[in-house]
Length: 393
Image (cartoon, rainbow, N blue to C red):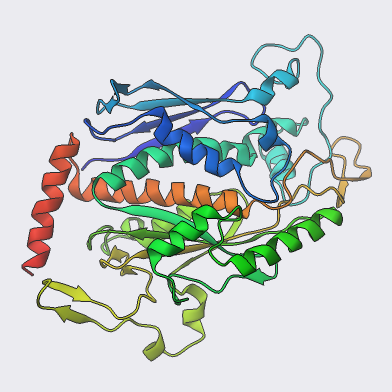
């Protein structure tokens, strides 16, 4: 079984982020530009903070690629942190000339205090630098490579924003909304909030501006959709092979994500079964099973069923607030307002790009498990043979 494995390393204001990805087959075209496109999308979005004006993320492919093609070995990628230059003497592996001022006032909602307690660090910067969402740039780089693999076999992954704060768009791939998926993708890509509903997007901008004036932040919900998936990815036979469970873990691992749904999700608990499950039909001409609806979100029993995959993730408001919440200094135990680090007001659009990456990584892993081969051409042959089997079922 071919296994996809990856790791990221690096701190928010350290010299660079590093990602290593193993399991991508040989012979897949890959350029730095393929990754940079998604890195740039992650940095855009109405409501982003000052850090995005400093960083212009570009990847360096330092291993696993030769002459524009993957070699079948581990792929190593580096993303420079341009802001590191401003942190000389405070970040980096060398001993400091003199101890930098410690950050001792944890921010409610962050990993600061919990991480400090777990690792015994009295300078909470030792925790927050790795816990920062800056780490998601490395995830997006890994996801871009996996997206390239998926596209090579006809699978497309994209996301769009459903809501920000109290403002909701009137489109969803699971519950309907009238837009073809191709148009939904195009509209979302053209929006600075990744929202396909222009009227809702304007109301979202207004809500973000109002939150910024109050020194507050906003969260929201985004939806990730994958088209072109064959039936049969994932498995029902063990808990850790169920694809819906793996997708939920992948999305929940993104910083600030507090809830995940597949298909219509929690709505399914509020309506009768006759309105939840998707009837099954058969197209004799195409030799394929059909569904008039996709409330299951493309997954049944932890296995893809051939319909578009639909996942949804809820992002809490960013925990770094200009109008700081009460906290306690971990050294003196005195009451203080929490420390403020430069931050966004709303990053839901950016989080949707990270969501695309995590779904792409998970789907690429499931694809390689089922059709694994050492080269892209071998995987393509394996998929073609399997699809012939499915059509003759």
